[in-house]
Image (cartoon, rainbow, N blue to C red):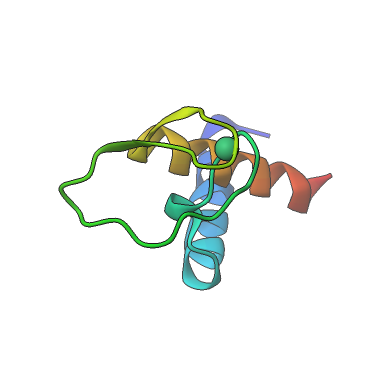
Length: 72
Ligand SMILES: [Zn+2]
């Protein structure tokens, strides 16, 4: 599969998942949901496992994991 197609699939999954799951609120390490964060909060510590989570990286990891689950 060409890289462009893979990216399109990734984007589609992002929109689909983003609509129903608050992926930026769930810990990418243990899955704990810590509720909504104000937009100025760029990183926080997970209350479940103590991981330090960057908002964007955490969301990206969650999207990638959800995408793998869908295609697996
Ligand atoms: Zn956690």
